[in-house]
Length: 89
Image (cartoon, rainbow, N blue to C red; front, side, top):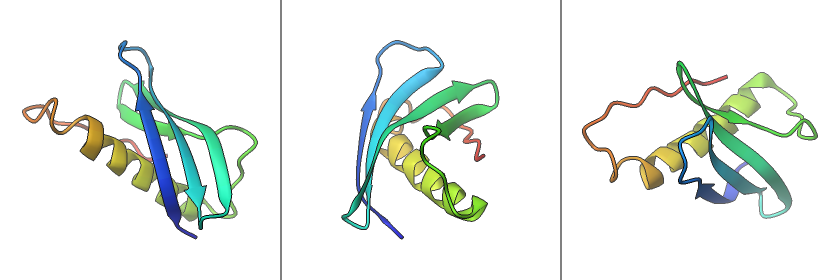
């Protein structure tokens, strides 16, 4: 299984909710309302309760891809001098 399309919409206000995502898996399965949130230890991905993964590794794989895409597209250019800690759940 692979994420074949990923759209991330960042929010401008700095709240625990920092972005919303929609993903497509293998050009066939659409996942909506995935969120990226800020916590004390870093950012993490929160999937809706209706999404259930077969294994924890699969969930971690998708979370990593979403966070990497968010950081590359929305954080690196704006804050190149800051370090960013990513929390994988």
